[in-house]
Length: 116
Image (cartoon, rainbow, N blue to C red; front, side):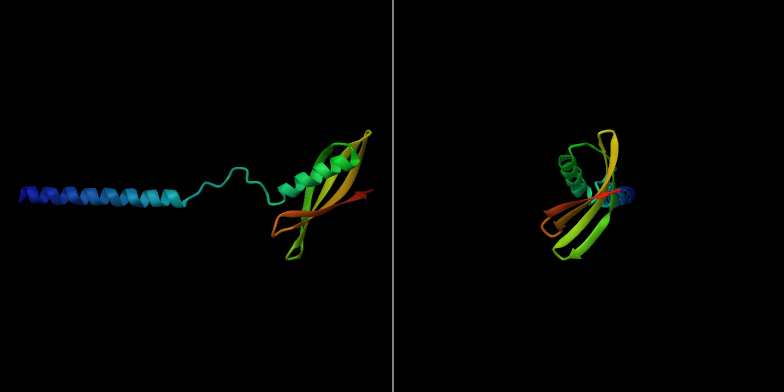
């Protein structure tokens, strides 16, 4: 009888331990650590805006700000950026509109407007 009681206790401890391991591992795998520096959705288009502006104006971009996204249709969206360009000891502010297809992620065109 003593052996029977001991083996029941051992089985319950083993079952409890297994249950604890399974519960803690399922919690561990369900929790995902968020990326420390997740790239924003507009980042790809910001890089394109900066590169195209540097080529067009022949000068480096000192700073830029994302102004927002406009969805025009199912197949056309725009990202707007305001860039600060340093050229010949002068600062030029340019608004860049990057138009693309959000379904295919293809560039449609890039427009520039100098702001005075």
